[in-house]
Image (tube, rainbow, N blue to C red; front, side, top):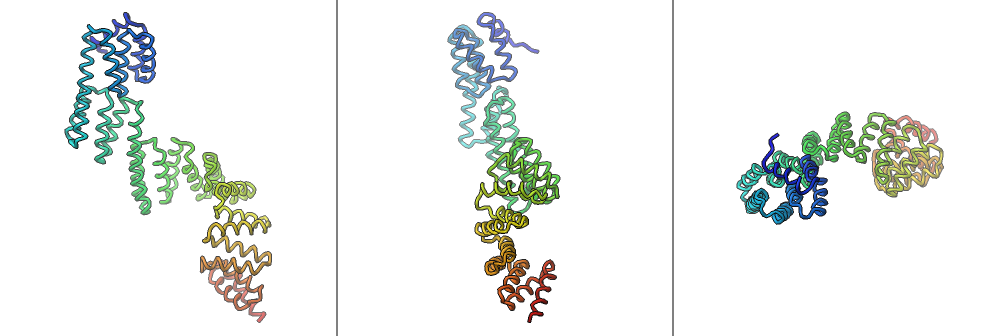
Length: 426
């Protein structure tokens, strides 16, 4: 390894001024800038007459993008050892860097972009271990939407100074910008093109969890569940509490009929965010499919505790109570469902069914009609309306309702039977 005259001088001087400088410089040269800087500050506080401590502090400050501090410390070293020509040469080089950077910034601010690019590149050629010009070049290319070059220079800046978080933030901002472009395409339901933007985003910043989630969501919409799962798993590799990814993994398992696996992901989702009412509902729905009604009710009640207006949860609670023969509880929950969602036609149908079972035909008639007003061709509601009208003595209205119900294959047999019974009574 080539040893410069300046390094030889530092080694000689370290024997004179302090035995710890060599260790501190080794930390710095190994890239441990912050540790070396803090240790060097402690060293100069305890050895305020040692110029080498201030020289090292200046170099570290420069590597951390602090030109002002670098200048301050180097001037202090010169003040302590006025005859040292090496210190003066180092200061002249630092001052030249400051002037070049100032001129490059002026050109950039004046809109002389090409000249600014040349100026920053010139600084890099002479000061390759100074991160700031890499970052400034990255910002120029970012402003021109040249993301490939922007990312290249931001990464170079990180390579030189990994302790400046703004450099990584700039890369993430590009990834976010691409993801937002993907969102616009996604809203137009062009999922394949949205995937391309999202994947580009993940390549630019592999730590950007949201981009992997959006890739997974787009593939889910396309129906490619395997690719969706692959990307959602990448999302939770970077953030194991990314609740939307956890929930969507549960949705995929549910779609594929794997309710046990779906429960696993939904439980992780509500563990990650206990206020995510949609995940509580999905968990309850999977438990219901597994015929674990007690667990289902716990999850569904958690959903409505978080969001007391969540109609879908009230409806499923009502269904479970109805299946358990707890009709009063089912009625109250179906009523809460329709109270919180004026379009909840299936809840109205189910409410009509329970009310007919309890022989409350007048209320059943109202609930069935409410369903039909929302969904004109909903055969189940026509059937329940027919039952209510029949038991209220309105045979003509009942027959009309049953005829409407008979248009649906699912209800045809029962409806035609009721029509025959009405005809016999005539």
